[in-house]
Image: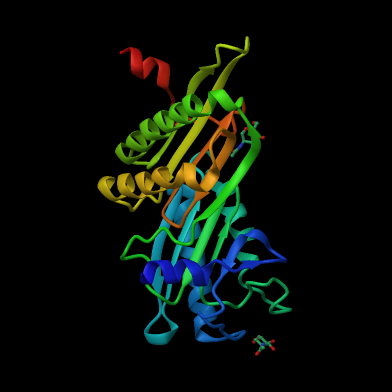
Length: 266
Ligand SMILES: *[C@@H]1O[C@H](CO)[C@@H](O)[C@H](O)[C@H]1NC(C)=O
Ligand SMILES: *[C@@H]1O[C@H](CO)[C@@H](O)[C@H](O)[C@H]1NC(C)=O
C-alpha cells in the first residue's frame, strides 16, 4: 500500500526533462546553499567516484532532516571516466547551481533520473534499506511487433532469455549480465537474434537482486505488451531490457555474452 502510494507520488513526469525524470512534489524542495544541498552534492560526488570503478554505489550523508539517501548506477558496459561524466551530467538536471529550477526536478528532494546508460536517485527518505525499486520507468524501445500468430512464442523466448540473465546477473559480482537468443518464425525466412540485459545495483545481495529482477520480469508483458520487439523496465535497484536484432550493449572485458541456445543444449 505504502509502496503503491510512493510509486503514484513519484509518477508525475517532469515535462522539461522528458519522461525519464521523476520528482515527487509531495517530497518537497530544498533551497540553494542549504545543508541539504551541500549534503546532496558531497554524497553525489562520493557515489559517482565509486560508481566509476564499481558500476553502482549507494549511501547516505548528513543528519536529521538534512540527511540524503542516494543510489547511482552506470550500465555495466559504461565504466570509468565515461560513467562518471554521464552521471555528473545527469546530476545537473536535479541540482541546479545558478538558475535554480530551470529543470522541472531541480531542487526537489525526491528525484530519480533514468537515462540509457546511467541513472541516479536521491531522496530524504530512506529508500535504500527496503531495497525498493521504485520509481520504475517502463519504456517501449521498439513498438514494432512480431506477426500476431508468433506473439506467444516470441514472448516465451524473451522471458526465457531474461530469466536466464536474471539468474546470471544475481550470481555475478558485477550484478550485470548480457545475452542473446536466436529467434525465427516458421512462416518467415529470416533468422533473428534477441539481445537482453539484466543489472542490479552492486550492493544487492544475490537473493534480493534475483527477486527484484523476477518482480519486473513478472510485470513485463502487462506493462510492455505482447510481441513488442523492444522494451525495458528501469528501476532504482534493478533493470531489464531486450531488443530484437539490435545489440544495444558492448561486451566488455568483465562481461561475457550468455548464449541461450548454448545454455539449452548443454
Ligand atoms: C549561495 O552562495 C554563493 C556563494 O557563497 C552566493 O554567491 C549565492 O548568492 C548564494 N545563493 C543563495 C540563493 O543564497
Ligand atoms: C560501445 O562501443 C562503441 C564503439 O566503440 C562506442 O561508441 C560506445 O560508446 C560504446 N558504448 C558504451 C556504453 O561504452
